Image 1 (cartoon, rainbow, N blue to C red):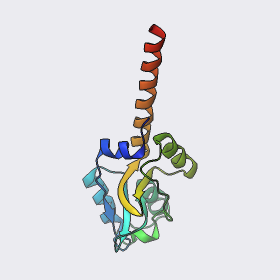
Image 2 (image 1 turned 135 degrees about the vertical axis):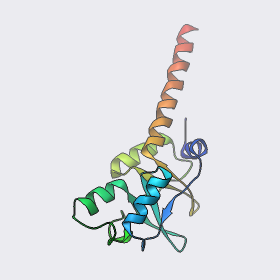
Image 3 (image 1 turned 90 degrees about the vertical axis):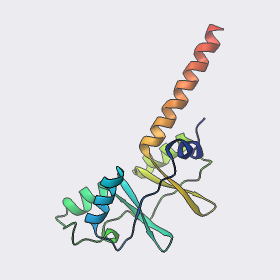
Length: 142
């Protein structure tokens, strides 16, 4: 069964960040440049929040704010929900669903080691289910 550590191993450990003092327009550009839907908000090596496309849509665009005049700190999601690497992927998916979030920082012994998305976990759970189905088919066939 997949755990968060295996999910990170499969996807890679790239973590893209933004400072809370940066303007939203710069964060949006960075997300587009890296092809990601969220950036971890970091200041002085400390996690402060998450800034996502959802934050942009709801707290900037729909609120009539300017992305050139709004700092990330004003619209980021905080406090953060985190997950440990030995947690099963299914539990991570449940945690995201419960908290209505799509990205989770992975923290081991207080140290940030990666960032996963809901898509990463869905893929891991589907892979687990396919393996189980194959094992059951093989068992039934003898």
